[in-house]
Length: 311
Figure 1 (cartoon, rainbow, N blue to C red):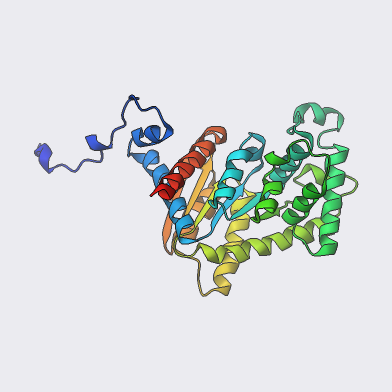
Figure 2 (tube, rainbow, N blue to C red; figure 1 turned 90 degrees about the horizontal axis):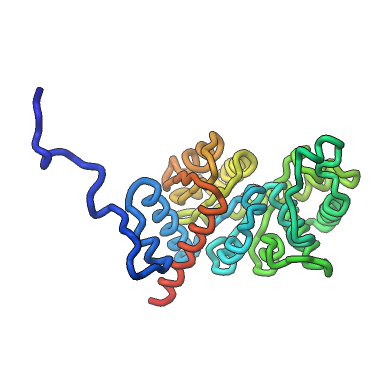
């Protein structure tokens, strides 16, 4: 057996990278500074830095949302990021749009699926299905995307319970493009008698083209965040990225991607974290509950942007 001196051995962890215990300063900035500079804590810092750098350089910051992110009460922090310019395009699946609409109009969402399934009433809310499907028909007639159709519907309504909690309402007011990407048969409003497949397909496909048109601005420093979508948004993103690169000589490249979900899935890992950055860039997976991790990310970005503005 041969041994070597410790001085010759490469080490993965140094004392300078350790966390620190709470001190006199209990601010959020102090908490961030106290995180260890190791593994996912290091990745978290890199994602925050990438968003701040993208904001500074005017690159696109695309946030893709699953329904769970909306219904766990995270709209206020996402809206704040839009207001700060730290989200330039928000893309969501159909369930996210439904939860967003219901929260704005009724102040409540997320029914008991098991109870409603027993007697066939699951997803059969009249007002939700009627209003959204009528909005899609109007959007088809006017040449609007699905996100724009819902945003206009909310802005024209005079009976909203909490418009300030709606991502789609706020995006329209802030001038941030919002796109909705439907999956026919996967959303409760497709069960409604007012459902119009042509209108759903037309408005959602228009939003697919709008998402593809937004992606070239990722080139050389943009950021894509996949927040809680395990299937729909990773699949849509990969196809939209193909269109952007097909039309722009292989660009965009050299951007940052991050999948932030409660558990790791195949499609986000391949279609968001790995494949899009093979030609340049970096991809991260940060795993944790949305209701904890998304506010942490949003607060960290806000803190960094405020620090930069103060310089």
